[in-house]
Length: 539
Image (cartoon, rainbow, N blue to C red; front, side):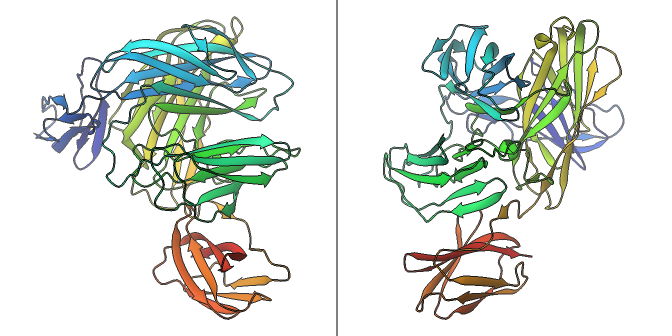
């Protein structure tokens, strides 16, 4: 577990397997706490206050914990260091029971791209259908961890270099260890999508046990621009709504908020690329996947040719060249390494300095190619240690000379807009000089995505908005629009209605009032007839 000492500065350390820890800090007063799951476990004291008066002064602090509910709380991670056509590719799955009871019937479903075939695995499995495989685990005790791996072979001719291929792991039981919100109706939304010739079809389904009460709107993002905000919709039990869009190779991202009060962290979304002839590749991972619940993990990687064997990647990658990302996001980092020397590596160590814009108390270590231990030091450095890794050199065994580790971490809630999160790592093979990875970066920003320009839906109708961007007010001017009352609606990028007003003439003025700066989507209608949509930027 992660132990935190908060004083004039904040320091972190991870406990060993036996629960012991040592945390060096300067003299001062500190509040000692841990990052325990408050839905299943609790500490007997929320924090312990200690005072260290001078150098070498020592406080011995035990942190007793106890369970407050009997609940399985399973974690799973799936990962692969890289995907190459016509080669074997190895996937690794790590799992853990962080619940308060032992689980005697644990299994993991792995769903692969249809162009993959499993050729070997370190544990038995059953193929359920063309793309899904079940790995039966059995009993997993409290705080017990485990892992397995499997080899796949990818087709050569049907895969495009640069295309993104996804794999999903889901562990059972997939219980959400928290009481449902009393306002939750039982509705639960899921999203699916597929390429159909020259179109993509997206489907939202209510898979829950109750109907939606409050309406929602979905977003369609084409490449890096917001293409559409839907009309409000509600779904009964088992009902669905579809969106079919003409495609010519664009990357489409489709997302909708989960219903109010829904337990867990799901946010239904799906990304589809390479549907059509003029494929836009390389931007699939600009958005994260719907895998913030611990019992599901989705790994999406680009198919590569040649590669840098020691590098660092982040998902979501972020929008455009600035890698813009929304505040309060969670980032998943993967550090990859390969022994390109001339002999076996016995020890690999990775030192990763965490940006102060990231919240170390949310750090969660994930899947890896080999067993490892990790420590978090007081200056924000995470050390991953692969002891006795016995990593062969690439001349002897190219496939097994590769390794990786990944982790997730969330932003600080108060991270200011305009800040950039940088991250890089140093990789040590045995006791040689370090190898430096590339540096990833994310710009925390709103607006974080562009919006397609104004569009009208009635012949000869024209619309002008000026100034746009604006500071205090913006004027909307219509030409050849229908006479009579019209409705103006303003939405956030997540589809929530921010403002609505009616107007009669061909021109009206929108006052900012207390609207926060950012990018918004507007829509103008007459009754049910859509007249125009577009973007509005507040500076």
